[in-house]
Length: 368
Ligand SMILES: [Zn+2]
Ligand SMILES: [Zn+2]
Image: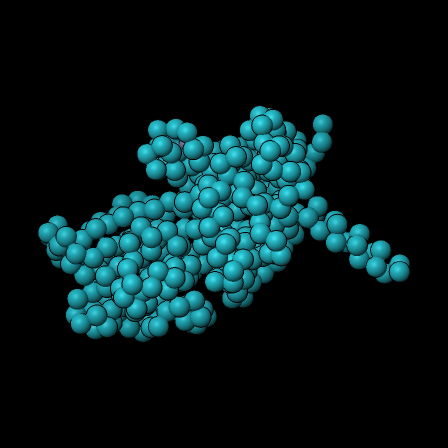
């Protein structure tokens, strides 16, 4: 029995490095050796005990790696040693929800989100990928791990905010919160051809990044009322599309107030407790507004499309990868990420085995 190192959730506030059995791929499954993964805001919710998962679970849902072994039935499409990613959401492609185009809700509410939620995740040396034929996406030639590590979740989710909001050429779009997902929504608005893109946050570094990612206007909500400012910028109407990328009542409400009659509020945040729509912001329910929610789209075709944008240099997500840690330093990485210290946006996490090969190569080079 082979063992591997993994970062395991042991209850609120506790994530520890443990030795676990290396997974074995059965028919239709694959095992990948993780070379890079990352921490998501959702993982922080889990660790804080705000989103329940089973103690003993390996967390993490953003895998970049190399195929280590393949279960039966995959040999014609994949090979051992192939560099791949899998989406944070791994739909089966065959159930009621998948065949009704609700892939992220595979088998039931939120069911497509399996890694680090209902099955072991990517914070480990190896990861078992279920329904591999639907979910393993080869990384294009010449692309680094850092260039694609935000594709499985952050970019897919951020972009889905503008896709679900049906942003059209010439639209005005306001994105509430400019964390990694909000920034990817900002970038997505630019890709979809929005004319006016407004980024709202309070952290100056994030507002700067918002400009870099496509915002033509940024609003620091501690200095200005974002709803009033957005109305001023849109002839008093409100934005065509607003995107909520935080998951709090206050941002939801501001986004709704800033959505013009007939416009769309596209919500990406993860909420807890109750979310209320006040009478006036909701035009008493008669404003023809659309409110949509989206859970990160996954599956290999989605991943292929997003990585094509990376490969053709239409997008560059690397400015968001601000810090690097070994998987062994998960506690330190979690602490930094959750406290948002030192300008952290996203951290790249590398299991020890991920750096074995370069180390050997360096040693050989030195001997020469
Ligand atoms: Zn996530
Ligand atoms: Zn399904």
